[in-house]
Amino acid sequence: MKYMLIMRAGDEALQEFQDIDFAEVLDAMGRYNDELITAGVLVAAEGLDDASKGVVVDFTSQPPVVTDGPYGEAKELFGGFWILDVASIEEAVEWAKRAPMSGPGIKTEIRRIASIEEFPQDNEWIQKERAWREATGQL
Image (cartoon, rainbow, N blue to C red):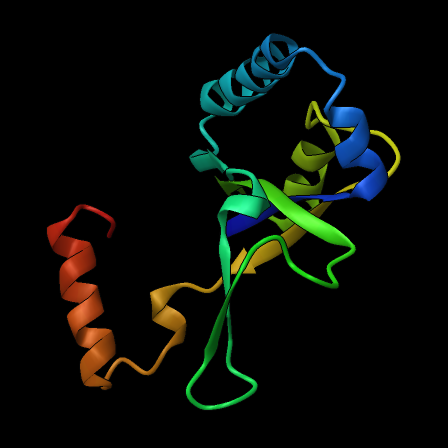
């Protein structure tokens, strides 16, 4: 089963992050990612750029409204994610507990990723996606 581990940080954590040497962060993340690779559970991992460089598409009205980041009322921002292929949510939780970024205001959300097999197999869009996944080696 695949799970996404999503790094979330509040204002306090983001402020503290400003004072940490970025080389230390890279070393800690690199060691953690190496453990995931060695264990054979890492599918993907990416860090997200500064939220102020992003945009938000708000679908409250039509047409949708696009605004510059950062998010106006967000108390936490996503900093990055890992996708792990593990046996259970308990295993995903154990890996999340070992993530190098920790402290007040830092959280890791864990969400199971739905498999394509869970969607109606007679749906033409699911069939097209399955064909694409097979062609790209994802199935």
